Amino acid sequence: MTVKQTVEIRNKLGMHARPAMKLFELVQSFDAEVLLRNEAGTEAEASSVIALLMLDSAKGGHIEIEASGPQEVQALAAVIELFEAGFDED
Image: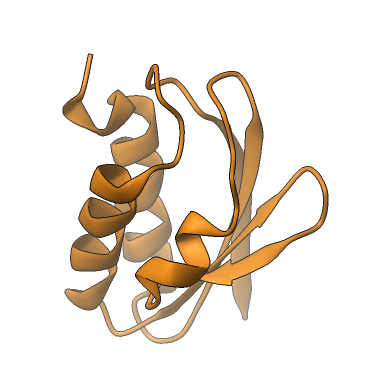
C-alpha cells in the first residue's frame, strides 16, 4: 500500500541544501521509501539529497509526499511534520 499527502513549503528559502539534508536524515530512520513530487511533476527519492535539490521548489509551492513500505504511515507523518515546521528555519 502507498500513502500520500500534499504539503505547502513554508520555510522562507524553499527546498535548499539544509532542508534537503534534514529530510534525507529523517527518512533514513524509517523502513519506507519516500518520494517527493513538485508541481511540475519532477520526482525525487528522499534518499537522495541531490535529487531533492533538483525539485527546486520555493516557499508557497506544493510538494506531494508519497511513502510506501512497512513504516509508510509513520514516515509520511514525520515528513509532513518537518514541512509544517518549516524545517525549523524560520
